[in-house]
Length: 169
Image 1 (tube, rainbow, N blue to C red):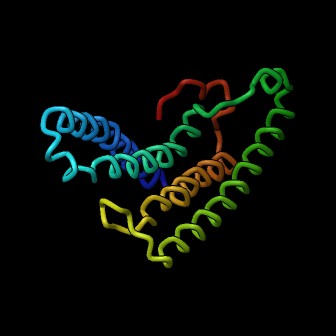
Image 2 (cartoon, rainbow, N blue to C red):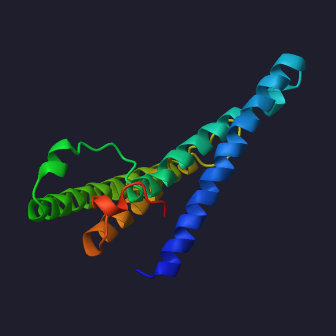
């Protein structure tokens, strides 16, 4: 996969995460302030709470791929680090293969759930948009994570290499 594509993808992920991380607390604080200062208009802003919920789902799932790429997922490395290099390579590949398979399963399941919700016509109460937007982050996020597992399988260095520890992408 091209370096320019991955750079653009990382940039897009970072920007989306940054926007959500800034907008969500600001919107929520604004909503709380309105409730405290002018409770009479608070019902007109009930949509903010729902929008923040949708944003939280997108924030979490968009960050999955970046977290794996940077070695930020939870890992039990005590035994792994003590293995000889050839065994580490095999175990690392197995970890990535199982991770890829599991992500692809979750992409399919997430897509099926999102499509079901979309077909059901379920609408969010305050935003008046399809609830599929709340379920869509699952297949999107696990697709991004599957991509990272796939890249780990086909290229080096990877997150398991000592030289790559703590390196920012």
